[in-house]
Amino acid sequence: MNIFSRYLIRSVFTGFIAAAALLIPLFTTFDFINELDDVSANGYRWTQALVVVLMRLPRCLIDLGPFIALLGGIVGLGQLSKTQELTAIRTAGFSIFSISLVILYSGLMLTVSLGALDEWVASPLQQRALQLKNTAVAQVDNTVNTENTLWARHNNEFVTVNSLDEHDQPKGVEIFTYKPDLSLKSYIYAEKATILDNGMWVLHNINQKKWANGKETVTSQASLQWHSIFTHTSLKELSMPSDSFSIKQLIHYIDYLHNTGQPSIEFKIALWQKLGRPVLILAMILLAIPFTFSIPRAPGLGSRLAIGVIVGLLTYISDQIIVNLGLLFSLNAQLTTLIPPMLLLIIALVLIYRFDKQH
Image: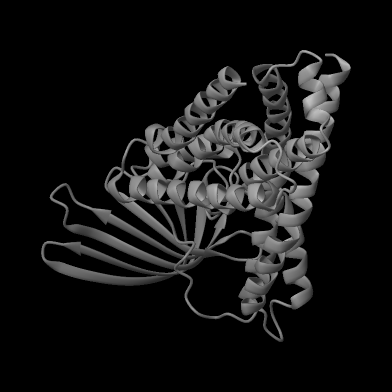
């Protein structure tokens, strides 16, 4: 790698830093304001909300990765164009295609960094932030929680867990057992349960109903051992939203959903969104090349950045529409998540090819 390539990479990464410094405080402020809606006097305090927001900073950085790639590329290359350094580099023998390869290399470096950050930093921190918030809210919130209800199925047995306590033990356990003709055979409600190491649960404060020969039998017990149909996946992990999972966790959870007969399209889309994000980031950074060479003598970056923000917003909105349509109609997860970034990448490459031929 020669000195011009290193200089281009350094300039582009300076643009990345500038874009991140602009976007992250803005979106973090919005996130903090949103968290303040859940703050209460004796439960979730504003200091905890601030900690939660700070713990979600890596996730914010990753979610803004495509925007940072586009705006950072426009800023970095635009500044070189404004000072005529880009012209000097081209005079030294660099074509637009050669410059694009260097920019692509910068995008690969950014993509690898964000991927590692997502897998080993952002996901664990986001899950800890959710646990911190849920624990604080649960101290004063005595209402029934329906958002994080867990379901599992094995043959004709269905189980639901309403929530987890501060020690990640199940609360509000309901077990439905059906006959082959799909009529209800038995129903068990346990106020809480204790998870043992051997896959057994001890159910506490039980009400049990059984139906046989047209008669209903109701019994109550202080405790009862039950062989859990949940897999060895942590219940705490199962209660997390799909966007907080790492790739490894998503693969494991999708396998769990298959084994328990539950729909997995949401988590498949989340997995392929993570796998397709590098393509989107590379496409967005390559789009900075046409922005730079379409108006090379423009005195400022304002117009380029404004158009870049519009392109970024349109890309984000289009991606969200396609993803939600995929969830609504249970479309193929790979096609739903990979087609938009692939189309954008093809558009960027076509534009680069045209500008390379014209200049």
